[in-house]
Image (cartoon, rainbow, N blue to C red; front, side):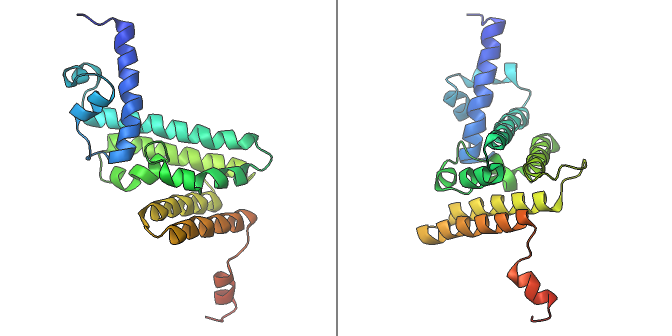
Length: 204
């Protein structure tokens, strides 16, 4: 039976949305086209009518996931303390556990670095968008280039969630998130760490 153009477009959107979750859960190379299409309730035979390649789907699914993540960050801007709102949802036990729905940079960042330029591009665009949101939250959006604070904070938070997901020790896993939250607040305030101060004074 011939599928209408509207139905074909709806199927395509479904595949992109499902793939954005399944790639985050299994990795780009951890799931094949058959299972991706099955997850969308479709057969593998229709894949190449909608996408030119698996990389094409991976790129579109990644862009969808990153745009969703950026919107989640931007929503925090409406709270009385926007940066604290970001810290609370990002460096949380809930986010640590929501692999299929969580940050795509955490779930797929190292994987994306080994992919084609087509797949890496959405990650670069998404990371830049996260930098912009952070600079806006800190009132530091003064140029087209991200601030050092924004780059340090995003790197710290992505790394903290990544490490916290690896650790089997619950106390240590939570400790990583808590330590990162404290450092993010310090960086946002423009304070030096006690280690940096000690080095500057010649104590180390």
